[in-house]
Amino acid sequence: MREHEYDFADFESAYDDVDTRMRRGKKAKRTDDRDRTGRLTKEERAALARVREDALSEADKPEGADRWSTWDDADHGPTPRPDWVITDLGAADRELGIIKTGKEADVFLVERRSATQSCLMAAKRYRGSDHRMFHRDAGYLEGRRMRRSREMRAMSNRSSFGRNLIAEQWAVAEFAALGRLWSLGAPVPYPVQRSGTELLLEFLGDEDGTAAPRLAQTRPDPDELVDLWTQLVDTLTMLAAEGVAHGDLSAFNLMVHEGRLVLIDLPQVVDLVANPLAESILERDVRNVSTWFTARGLAPELTDPHELMVTLVDAAGLN
Image (cartoon, rainbow, N blue to C red; front, side, top):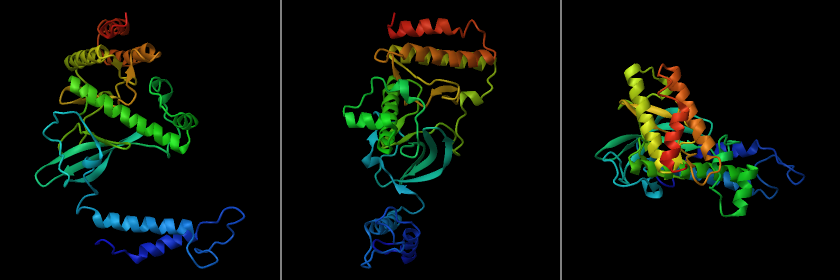
């Protein structure tokens, strides 16, 4: 469909939708789709405007894809970028399915294709006004205060505006944390870009779109178990030396990709100095992973949570 060519069936559908809505309040007694003068009301004009926008959007959609690349309007990941990252503004994105649903966000598989190359990415989309609570935000928002009191009130009251602010704050925080840790050499997915509450991240998995397993889904043999634990201790020590902790670490927030343990789900990264709850949050992280590895058969003397805490606190300089 070319620009300005609209499907009049869409217009009729819009009228039908408007016609079914009951008017609210004493001033809204009529149920037809026009006011007493025969002209469209403000609500009906808005509905038709949306139809026009949708029609134009459909007309502009690239063939065989869902949208043009959003690279130009997004925040970008750190440099130097991996060779597979496509920055061509003429590229197009196609959604291939959902990878994971969560309480705060859903993750989709997206292919970005240009004239010369293609790549798979994980699109993590935080929910905003349609989601009532962010179950992890109470302790993690310490040190992340918004400057405007109006915004803080909206977030505290969980208004629609406030929930959208929280969603975007989580997205911004995770994107910043991933960029910082990736630049340090930590095992995290490369953060390609952030646009609003959507993050496009390195896809960890096979070329056919099969995602790498979470650590919780694996059954490593004894040697693999020791290797994965060693990788984890090295990673946590690196984070502690940088003054941060994961904040929600478990076997479900770790992936195993080609033998490499990778940290994921990082919107709640905790500052070990600024957050007054940091040490208790770090201790919970350590306890969670130690318990999982011990339950899988790793020797308790290797996974002693107290010993690991001593190592991390020392690395963070919190003694």
